[in-house]
Image 1 (tube, rainbow, N blue to C red):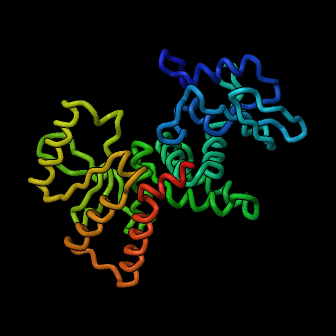
Image 2 (image 1 turned 45 degrees about the horizontal axis):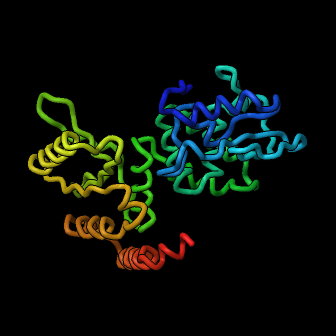
Image 3 (image 1 turned 120 degrees about the horizontal axis):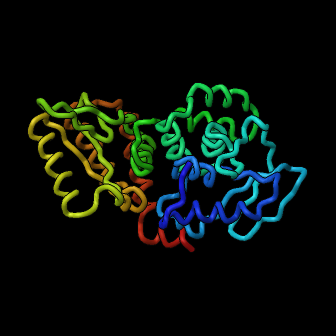
Length: 289
């Protein structure tokens, strides 16, 4: 479980809230994920103001306390645990709740992290089958199918989903690239058969002159020694204008031997055209009114 530090405002807020929470309340969803070491918040969310999720029994209502969001639900005793004096949903139940309740992109990003941290995918699939016919059951199965423990960062998940949603082949994650007598490099995602990769440069790990220089040197070595083409994307590409990198990826794959059926290529062209329309300045203004 996370230990509160000077810059961990969300953990500190959860601990403070818990001092006044009723005995039947349970920390849940994104807040529980955070305590389990999983960042399930939307990209760029403010941890100082994001509502903390509480779960309470349906027959014991609780008005939303300031800074909180209350969900009335049934939680079996087996899905609740206590860590450091705080009652929260278990690791597995938290993964399940995030997968079926968060917006699609955030749900997949959260589940990628849970899988990477060791949640049992087979157990989640069994629980998904038990939920057949209930709200979000079909969506849960979709999220499970889209998930991949190879994503190191939520931004890598978002990048992978952009690629899949555009109709391009699903990329493999964490592709090893050998070096003589030294540890292997790993590419974030890509297509080994076409020597084409996509890498997400997040702000936390890829800023600063030294880091950028190391990234550039690593990618140059991989291109020169193994012939890979590497397309680099950032948060701005994913959130605000994914079309250029998707067009570059499509063109590179076609030049390197990918031969999709005409109907699939037509679908990709249609998806990219729709993305262009939705990411014009006027469209962005309409979404934020």
